[in-house]
Image 1: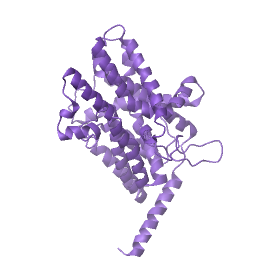
Image 2: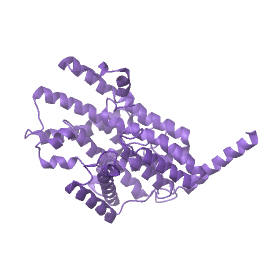
Image 3: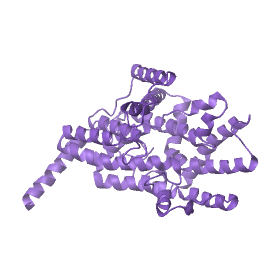
Image 4: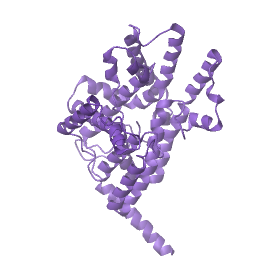
Length: 387
């Protein structure tokens, strides 16, 4: 290839990037606010499933039915948010800058925040005689920090690993979009289909691919301001509740399409529900909106720290003989959630000099991206893609 043709190709790619950036409409203010609220609500409900003794024991035990209300499948809307924000970051900064930022704000925190759980596991093994996390194979030791075949020591942070993989997928898809919108859509569809094999191809949870790609396509095709309306939400909820009530789809083998649908129906329904609720909260001043807006800058740290706190609660339960069927358990349950938030906010403030541990890259602003302010449109940098 001659130097002239190479220069022409580079110029063409730069022109395509400029055109893509110009064609990318700003995210409306209400959508930006609803994104912040959705992140806080989703992570709060998700943390409730990880508090001691965990959702598996709670749902299988004879506990207060009200506790089951916290185990809602709402975390998947975070995939949509991540996909939308990734497009905005990518088109403004390019693949090299964006992927470097995502490594710093997704992979590095996953490694660092897993270290306390490894230390706790080692201490527990010396006290109780249980196997140490360091007793496994070489691959097991690698997985503790960099999850390849299983989740990290800080289990909930496997979400960050899957989002980083989707950022790699998304970079390829968006580069193809610069060449052809049709081929970009086909590439997105190919990634979606590949990740639907049982157990996923590279991802731990294939629903993350579904939601991330949905958000990516919304933003890339100029619909970043879209939100599910109430009729759509109610239809999806009706389908989900009917399938659950009549025990539909759940008996299908894992390789069948029906099983794939059964995995997605509740997650899509609840994701769209919490998305719409977040928008309704963002539309008018209220105490919940104010609370979410105050917590949002710290929610990534709260998310990373909550499994560490839960492990200490689990240790206290062993010492004092606590059990989830005890009449005082609801008090322990609520106390855990409060501790997750309060201690997470404190840790976030302490870690302000280390923004990458709080899911924020250097030089990036805390405000949501591409908002439409009440004046000339601003050009803030998109924040790090966070859960």
